[in-house]
Length: 222
Image (cartoon, rainbow, N blue to C red):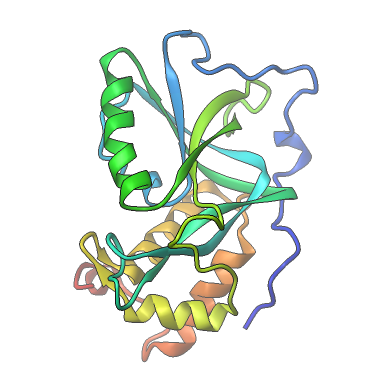
Protein backbone atom coordinates (compact mmCIF):
# COMPACT_ATOMS: atom_id res chain seq x y z
CA UNK A 1 0.00 0.00 0.00
CA UNK A 2 1.32 3.43 -0.88
CA UNK A 3 1.63 5.97 1.88
CA UNK A 4 -0.29 9.24 1.85
CA UNK A 5 1.86 11.83 0.12
CA UNK A 6 2.22 15.30 1.55
CA UNK A 7 1.36 16.73 -1.86
CA UNK A 8 0.74 15.25 -5.32
CA UNK A 9 2.99 16.06 -8.23
CA UNK A 10 2.42 19.35 -10.02
CA UNK A 11 2.63 20.03 -13.76
CA UNK A 12 6.11 20.59 -15.24
CA UNK A 13 7.46 24.14 -15.62
CA UNK A 14 6.25 24.27 -19.22
CA UNK A 15 2.67 24.34 -17.93
CA UNK A 16 3.28 27.01 -15.33
CA UNK A 17 1.07 30.09 -15.76
CA UNK A 18 2.56 33.48 -16.47
CA UNK A 19 2.94 35.52 -13.25
CA UNK A 20 0.96 38.44 -14.69
CA UNK A 21 -2.00 36.36 -15.90
CA UNK A 22 -5.32 37.43 -14.41
CA UNK A 23 -8.14 34.85 -14.33
CA UNK A 24 -11.61 35.79 -15.52
CA UNK A 25 -14.98 34.11 -15.08
CA UNK A 26 -15.94 33.82 -18.72
CA UNK A 27 -12.67 34.24 -20.58
CA UNK A 28 -13.58 36.12 -23.74
CA UNK A 29 -17.27 36.09 -22.80
CA UNK A 30 -18.14 38.15 -19.69
CA UNK A 31 -21.63 36.59 -19.61
CA UNK A 32 -20.27 33.05 -19.33
CA UNK A 33 -19.50 30.92 -16.28
CA UNK A 34 -16.92 28.15 -15.97
CA UNK A 35 -17.62 25.14 -13.74
CA UNK A 36 -14.69 22.94 -12.66
CA UNK A 37 -15.29 19.21 -12.34
CA UNK A 38 -12.75 16.89 -10.74
CA UNK A 39 -14.91 13.86 -9.84
CA UNK A 40 -17.81 12.35 -11.76
CA UNK A 41 -18.26 15.62 -13.67
CA UNK A 42 -15.17 14.81 -15.75
CA UNK A 43 -17.03 12.02 -17.55
CA UNK A 44 -20.70 12.76 -16.82
CA UNK A 45 -21.58 16.45 -16.52
CA UNK A 46 -25.25 15.89 -17.49
CA UNK A 47 -25.90 19.58 -18.19
CA UNK A 48 -25.72 21.61 -21.39
CA UNK A 49 -22.49 23.55 -21.94
CA UNK A 50 -20.86 25.57 -24.72
CA UNK A 51 -17.22 24.62 -24.27
CA UNK A 52 -15.03 22.35 -22.16
CA UNK A 53 -11.32 22.29 -21.41
CA UNK A 54 -9.04 19.85 -19.63
CA UNK A 55 -6.69 21.48 -17.14
CA UNK A 56 -5.79 21.88 -13.50
CA UNK A 57 -6.18 23.98 -10.37
CA UNK A 58 -3.31 24.72 -7.99
CA UNK A 59 -3.44 24.75 -4.20
CA UNK A 60 -5.74 21.74 -3.87
CA UNK A 61 -5.36 17.98 -3.68
CA UNK A 62 -8.10 15.48 -4.53
CA UNK A 63 -9.08 13.06 -1.77
CA UNK A 64 -11.65 10.27 -1.37
CA UNK A 65 -12.78 11.72 1.93
CA UNK A 66 -16.45 12.49 1.27
CA UNK A 67 -19.16 9.97 2.10
CA UNK A 68 -21.95 9.36 -0.41
CA UNK A 69 -25.28 7.88 0.63
CA UNK A 70 -27.09 8.43 -2.68
CA UNK A 71 -25.02 8.32 -5.89
CA UNK A 72 -22.42 5.69 -4.92
CA UNK A 73 -23.60 4.34 -1.59
CA UNK A 74 -26.49 4.08 0.86
CA UNK A 75 -27.37 5.21 4.37
CA UNK A 76 -26.15 1.89 5.76
CA UNK A 77 -23.06 1.70 3.52
CA UNK A 78 -21.82 5.12 2.43
CA UNK A 79 -19.59 5.15 -0.61
CA UNK A 80 -16.41 7.18 -0.99
CA UNK A 81 -16.22 10.07 -3.47
CA UNK A 82 -13.74 12.89 -3.92
CA UNK A 83 -13.47 16.39 -2.56
CA UNK A 84 -10.75 19.03 -2.68
CA UNK A 85 -8.34 19.54 0.20
CA UNK A 86 -6.53 22.86 0.47
CA UNK A 87 -2.86 22.11 -0.11
CA UNK A 88 -0.32 24.78 -0.97
CA UNK A 89 1.74 22.33 -3.04
CA UNK A 90 -1.23 20.47 -4.50
CA UNK A 91 -2.46 20.28 -8.07
CA UNK A 92 -5.74 18.69 -9.21
CA UNK A 93 -6.60 17.90 -12.81
CA UNK A 94 -10.13 17.96 -14.15
CA UNK A 95 -12.44 19.52 -16.73
CA UNK A 96 -13.86 23.05 -16.83
CA UNK A 97 -17.20 23.53 -18.58
CA UNK A 98 -18.34 26.87 -19.94
CA UNK A 99 -22.06 27.63 -19.62
CA UNK A 100 -23.64 30.68 -21.26
CA UNK A 101 -27.00 32.40 -21.28
CA UNK A 102 -29.83 30.13 -20.19
CA UNK A 103 -27.32 27.33 -19.66
CA UNK A 104 -26.01 29.10 -16.56
CA UNK A 105 -29.21 28.95 -14.51
CA UNK A 106 -30.09 25.45 -15.74
CA UNK A 107 -26.64 24.08 -14.90
CA UNK A 108 -26.57 25.67 -11.45
CA UNK A 109 -30.09 24.43 -10.69
CA UNK A 110 -29.14 20.89 -11.67
CA UNK A 111 -25.81 20.94 -9.82
CA UNK A 112 -27.40 22.34 -6.69
CA UNK A 113 -29.43 19.13 -6.43
CA UNK A 114 -26.70 16.75 -7.60
CA UNK A 115 -23.79 18.20 -5.65
CA UNK A 116 -25.23 20.27 -2.79
CA UNK A 117 -28.56 18.71 -1.77
CA UNK A 118 -27.65 15.07 -2.47
CA UNK A 119 -23.88 15.32 -2.14
CA UNK A 120 -23.25 17.77 0.69
CA UNK A 121 -20.97 20.04 -1.35
CA UNK A 122 -20.52 23.82 -1.10
CA UNK A 123 -19.37 26.13 -3.90
CA UNK A 124 -15.94 27.71 -4.08
CA UNK A 125 -14.08 29.89 -6.58
CA UNK A 126 -10.90 28.37 -8.00
CA UNK A 127 -8.38 29.45 -10.61
CA UNK A 128 -8.35 26.99 -13.50
CA UNK A 129 -5.41 26.63 -15.90
CA UNK A 130 -6.34 25.07 -19.28
CA UNK A 131 -3.94 22.39 -20.42
CA UNK A 132 -3.52 23.98 -23.85
CA UNK A 133 -3.17 27.58 -22.59
CA UNK A 134 -2.06 27.70 -18.94
CA UNK A 135 -0.99 31.32 -19.35
CA UNK A 136 -4.67 32.25 -19.75
CA UNK A 137 -6.27 31.13 -16.45
CA UNK A 138 -9.98 31.24 -15.78
CA UNK A 139 -12.00 31.71 -12.61
CA UNK A 140 -14.25 28.70 -12.17
CA UNK A 141 -16.88 27.48 -9.75
CA UNK A 142 -16.06 24.24 -7.95
CA UNK A 143 -18.13 22.08 -5.61
CA UNK A 144 -16.15 21.18 -2.48
CA UNK A 145 -17.20 19.01 0.46
CA UNK A 146 -15.83 20.44 3.71
CA UNK A 147 -15.47 18.65 7.08
CA UNK A 148 -18.51 20.57 8.31
CA UNK A 149 -21.00 18.61 6.19
CA UNK A 150 -22.64 15.54 7.80
CA UNK A 151 -21.45 13.16 5.09
CA UNK A 152 -17.76 13.91 5.51
CA UNK A 153 -15.73 10.78 6.31
CA UNK A 154 -12.22 12.20 6.37
CA UNK A 155 -8.88 10.40 5.88
CA UNK A 156 -8.31 6.66 6.08
CA UNK A 157 -5.62 4.24 4.87
CA UNK A 158 -5.84 3.55 1.14
CA UNK A 159 -6.64 -0.14 1.66
CA UNK A 160 -9.54 0.77 3.96
CA UNK A 161 -10.89 3.22 1.37
CA UNK A 162 -10.49 0.57 -1.34
CA UNK A 163 -12.42 -1.99 0.72
CA UNK A 164 -15.23 0.49 1.24
CA UNK A 165 -15.35 1.35 -2.46
CA UNK A 166 -15.57 -2.31 -3.43
CA UNK A 167 -18.53 -2.84 -1.09
CA UNK A 168 -20.72 0.11 -2.05
CA UNK A 169 -23.30 0.89 -4.68
CA UNK A 170 -25.78 3.75 -5.12
CA UNK A 171 -28.40 5.06 -7.52
CA UNK A 172 -25.72 6.18 -10.00
CA UNK A 173 -23.90 2.84 -9.97
CA UNK A 174 -21.14 0.98 -8.19
CA UNK A 175 -18.54 2.94 -6.25
CA UNK A 176 -15.84 1.00 -8.11
CA UNK A 177 -17.06 2.40 -11.42
CA UNK A 178 -16.56 5.91 -10.02
CA UNK A 179 -12.96 5.10 -9.06
CA UNK A 180 -12.04 3.45 -12.36
CA UNK A 181 -13.57 6.12 -14.59
CA UNK A 182 -11.69 8.80 -12.69
CA UNK A 183 -8.47 6.82 -13.08
CA UNK A 184 -9.14 6.45 -16.82
CA UNK A 185 -9.59 10.21 -17.15
CA UNK A 186 -6.24 10.86 -15.48
CA UNK A 187 -4.50 8.54 -17.94
CA UNK A 188 -5.97 10.50 -20.84
CA UNK A 189 -4.49 13.73 -19.44
CA UNK A 190 -0.97 12.46 -19.95
CA UNK A 191 2.05 11.72 -17.76
CA UNK A 192 2.12 15.23 -16.29
CA UNK A 193 -1.23 14.60 -14.55
CA UNK A 194 -0.33 12.82 -11.32
CA UNK A 195 -2.57 11.87 -8.38
CA UNK A 196 -0.73 9.62 -5.92
CA UNK A 197 -3.77 9.26 -3.66
CA UNK A 198 -5.94 8.01 -6.52
CA UNK A 199 -3.21 5.72 -7.81
CA UNK A 200 -2.71 4.20 -4.36
CA UNK A 201 -6.41 3.35 -4.04
CA UNK A 202 -6.48 1.82 -7.54
CA UNK A 203 -3.44 -0.28 -6.61
CA UNK A 204 -5.10 -1.37 -3.37
CA UNK A 205 -8.25 -2.39 -5.26
CA UNK A 206 -6.11 -4.39 -7.67
CA UNK A 207 -4.65 -6.46 -4.86
CA UNK A 208 -8.15 -7.32 -3.60
CA UNK A 209 -9.60 -8.48 -6.93
CA UNK A 210 -9.10 -11.96 -8.40
CA UNK A 211 -7.91 -10.36 -11.64
CA UNK A 212 -5.37 -7.49 -11.57
CA UNK A 213 -7.08 -5.65 -14.40
CA UNK A 214 -10.77 -5.03 -15.04
CA UNK A 215 -11.63 -5.16 -18.72
CA UNK A 216 -14.09 -2.78 -20.31
CA UNK A 217 -16.63 -5.60 -20.47
CA UNK A 218 -16.24 -6.29 -16.75
CA UNK A 219 -16.65 -2.58 -15.97
CA UNK A 220 -19.93 -2.60 -17.90
CA UNK A 221 -21.26 -5.27 -15.55
CA UNK A 222 -20.56 -3.30 -12.36
